[in-house]
View 1: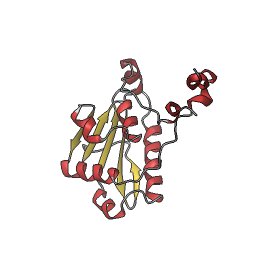
View 2 (view 1 turned 90 degrees about the horizontal axis):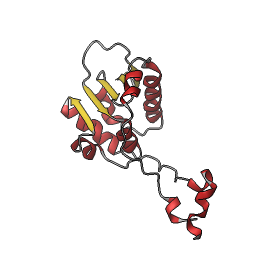
View 3 (view 1 turned 120 degrees about the horizontal axis):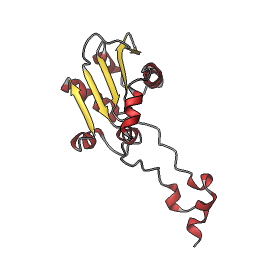
View 4 (view 1 turned 180 degrees about the vertical axis):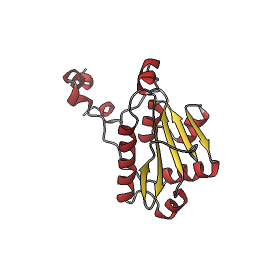
Length: 164
């Protein structure tokens, strides 16, 4: 196999059109909130998050906003589980805002939060100490390696790349 095809997929920096955000703000926010909560609780179940630090998250309010999709998820950690908060009665203790591409780059470990923050692609507001603790907690997770990009299986023309 061509070594170029065995590289992990590089996620480019992009911004979705403003129309997407204007539509996204009008849609219900609960589906992706529940998806995020399910993922966080799965991480708890798989013991990916350090239990010693989870107690410090108790009753803290968090918000994740995807600016170019017009969506946001607000949640808390209470009694050992992440839980959605659909109508928060206060400002979040910690809030993140970025375009979709920045979040994808974080998940793929292509970029780290500090780099995105200093490039002004990730906004972090609220309790600075809590933000640093959450960042260190996420950095400590031993994420499974992302699968390699199987480009040759998607496009027969790509199989010819290494044969010229």
